[in-house]
Each structure stands twice: as C-alpha cells, then as structure tokens.
Image 1 (cartoon, rainbow, N blue to C red):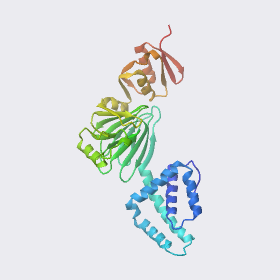
Image 2 (cartoon, one colour):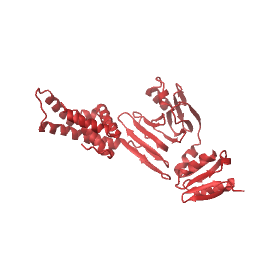
Image 3 (cartoon, helix red, strand yellow):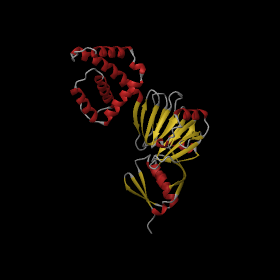
Image 4 (cartoon, rainbow, N blue to C red):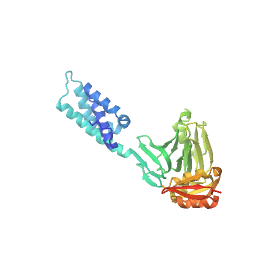
Length: 351
C-alpha cells in the first residue's frame, strides 16, 4: 500500500476496497492492522472512502451475495475454522481474489455514483448525472455528487445550479445546501447559495425544502414528505418542511436557523442566467455589482458611499462588466477609472 497523501479519487477508492477486503480475512496480523490505521489517519479522504466501502458492502446485497464473492467468503470461512491455521501463500491468493472482486465492483460503483464539479468566474457547464438528471452550473459554482442504493444525493457547496431531475419515485433526489436540504422526485428547480442566504426557486413540479435539518420534526418522516411532494399541494409539514409548487420561492439563512421566507417567484428572472442575462429589478446596487462580477474577470468596484442605498433595474449581458459599468456610470453620473487591467472603479466626480 502506498502512503502518499496526494492521490486521485480512483486510487483512494481502490486502496479502500483493498484494505476492506484484507481486514475481512481471518486472523489479520497486528502489523497489518497497524499499517491500516496509519493509512487511514494520513488523509481524511481515505477515511471517507473506507466508510463508503463499508456502507456499500453492507447495503448492496446483490453484490455481497454474488456467486464469485460468496464463493471466496465461504473459502475464507472454512480456513478460519481450521484450528492451527497460519497465513501462507495460497491463503493470501484467495484473499487477493476477494480483494480484486471487491475493488473492481467498488471502483465501478465509485465512478458511477460520485463526482466533483465546479465552474470558475464567467464559466457555465451542464453535467449529466448517473440517473439521467442534469445539473447546470452557473459561474463560480461547486457541487459534489454522491448516489447510493437508496437515494440520489448532491451537495451544493457554493454558487447556483439548476436541476432537471429524472423521475424515479423509489430514489428521492436530495440536494444538501447550507444547513438545509431540498428533496424532489422529478422536477426542475434552481438553488442559489449566496454569502448570507439560500434561495430555492421551483420552476416545474414539486419540491420539499427543509431550511434546517437540525430542526426537522420526527413526525416529518420521509414517507410524509414524499406523499406531500406527490400530492403537489403547497403546505408546511410541522413547521420544518416547506413544500413548494411551480412558481414559488423560499429563502433561508446559510446558518441553520430554521427560519424561512416564502414568496411568489419571477421564474423568468431566475432562468435568465442560463441565457447569460443579468435581470435586475429594484436590486441594491452593491448586490447587482457583486452579481455582475461573478461572470467576468473584469471586476467593478463602487467607491461612492453615498450610493450604497441606490437600486438598479434592467437586463444586462453577463460577462460584459465594461458595458454594465458604463450603464451605471451614465445613470448615476459617475466617473469611471480603470485602476488595473481587471478593475474598474466607479466614483462620484471630484468637485
């Protein structure tokens, strides 16, 4: 086994499967256990992958009970029953067979079920997920995908993403974001995680939004949430789960406070970013500038404290900070100064 800390995910997945199989062999030498503990402690990614292998092996009965793996496990069990068994080459050959079987199955599952996707400033991309769902990532967005036997899981780490979810009633689609979660069966929705809040906008179908998993009521079970989604009726389940229908929007703080505000959504505004359009309607000027800066390496800086309360309306082209800055300059009678190759400073004219 290698002790290098910097490894690609596939190599870590293979090593995790290798260790899991070795530790299932009878009478594992203490030296081998020491080496395993050192391997596990050297990188948090290794611990996560090993725990995922363990969960996979326990949950995926179809693989665990496959003829190849069952035959190897039976052989190892027979060896364990021998009173004076000592490790020898043929035994480790059998264990190696188990290792290869498990590693191959696990690595295939790992590649299918997990992924890490991100976009940089001004970049957008669409990702087809393993079940046929599509995640479209806005600029400056990062997601992690982790599907398992019973659920389709995604984590929105930062930014904004649109999800077109493939219908699969037996496997709910769950997006973890902030301290909450969004659950869907087959629908289209948008999630935007800004610095202070998370906004979920439903475009099609029905979703259940849990602003705070910590505040989730025990009576708001998976079954009740799923039945509410399938019914499609807007409601709140025990003040902890909000079920939205198309055209509705809910916002909650990035900190898991559990409080949320619900309102009608301007769906066209939310969808405009996919056409690289910035749609502002009475938007605070600082918020509008921050939004425009997501799409271009050319950054706008407002050096006019008197305008902190000003608001902006209009549709602008994303990625053209120069045009947006020119619009602000003209409307608010500002002076535009290019501080560097990638910085435009807007300030009030000196008297």
